Amino acid sequence: YGDAEVFIEAMTHGTTSKRGLLAATRSVLWGSDGVGPSVSAYHRGLVGEVVEMRPGVEFSVNDLAFTATESRHSDPATVGLLMKTPGQGTVGYTSDTAYFPELGAIYRGVRLLILCTMWPRAQHLEKHLSTDEAEKILLDARPGCAVITHFGMRMLNAGPEKEAAYLEEATGVPVVAAVDGLKATLADIVLFQGPRKSDKPRAVEA
Image (cartoon, rainbow, N blue to C red):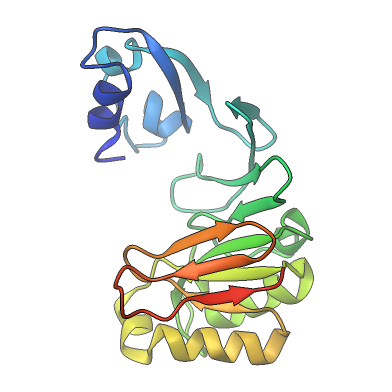
């Protein structure tokens, strides 16, 4: 949330118009369990609506419908997200979380699942996901396709593309390793495009 206040000032036209929606967890908004706050009371007061995200809380932004989902992390207020789009399916985002058995069911059947996968295979970090745990989630959730992101140094050293290829082979779910600037366009297909003109796009029927 380091940039949240900057975005709020832009959203409110330089603080001149009380508008927009700020959705964040209790720790970000007010501070809790020794974490936060990350947005000042002044900036909270600039927006038209503030939503405190907890599992099950729903809110909308234009024609996008969001539902906060359970996550288990060092910040107990952490949540994931489901984003329902008009006519193009649902996107799931695990957020930073430990694995727990119900995690796959939360995102079952989404069109695109974004998994924060910090460590590679055969390695474990408390309150985070590894490739092995991402595999369990994908086998349970069966999304149309997936992106792994939020890589730690061990993942970067192992090679995120190799881990994505392993997940795709092991689960049958098309998996893309995120890079800075990656775009995913949901239409009749899901199209992944890297930031450089030389990056070859990948089209997934999902």
